[in-house]
Image (cartoon, rainbow, N blue to C red; front, side):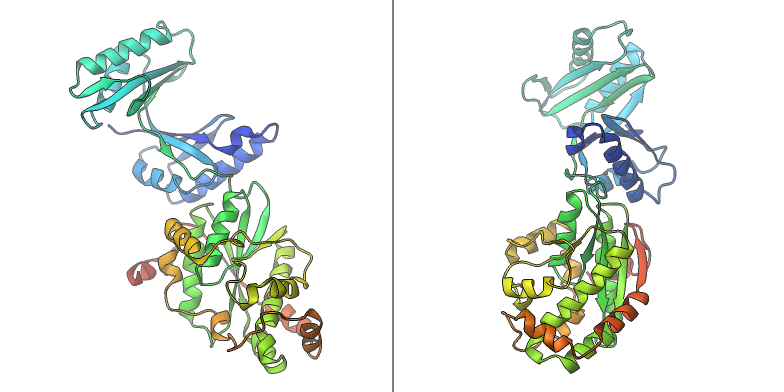
Length: 401
């Protein structure tokens, strides 16, 4: 049986009060974003539920995409029929015939239309009995059934579903403001972006590209990572910063063991300027405490000194195996491990300072007007808007994987 709509149940949105409509509106926008290539789909968001009207679009594909949208607790494919007893029974039977044999079920009826001639108990027995009579291998279990046939009687018709699919939970991305994600081509930062979006933050990604030291493939890899992340929010804006001149100047002017600290400071400065232009409220990084030289507490303190903007580090206490498992779960792992290096890995010094002193790095940087170089980089940023259906190198990357 072909279902014609999907019923979406909210997650944490349900706990919100007067501003619930802002969260539901944002969730509707995000849902429309992940199905932007399906123009027939209509989405209606009410206070308690959301209805996705398929209008002959591919329902299975839509449900696949809904699984990744934050703010959805669960959803169900729904069939609508007329408010005639015989048609309700026939529709219920057709739905239950598709489930496996030797399973248990129960019928749960919600009678929103009180003018309907049968009460809830009558409908439960009437429909459940009809299904039992015309099927083999199904049994009733009202306490712990394998399937629950949910039926809702409304003024405009009857809605039936027998499947509940878990969503991603969390809050709709964008409901809690905007932050800039410092997105490298590695494993950590995409996972950090994912976790930040799950708490309702819209992210815009910032990537630092240093040609000819970093290849076009490296840039394409990051674009693909941003495209994957857009599946959790609908869209993502990616800012690609030309970083070659800044990075070359650092390696000419700053002592080798301090170059990593200075590089991270300049990246943070540039990201903060882009954040201000884009009205962001915070910066997100994929740092995990002690994982590399630039992620010790001493290094973080020296790097953070360049900004008063909050820097969020969702992975701060995670070890590498946790991060790898998360990357596999969200679908970024295979792309992250492709052998196209970013500017940080290519310019890593052999013995980076793990306990850099702020006064020393400020002294080393004082001999160059970095502000001029930073302004030039910000003015030449390339910005790309991505969604899950973005064309370009996606097919190429699928072939590489």
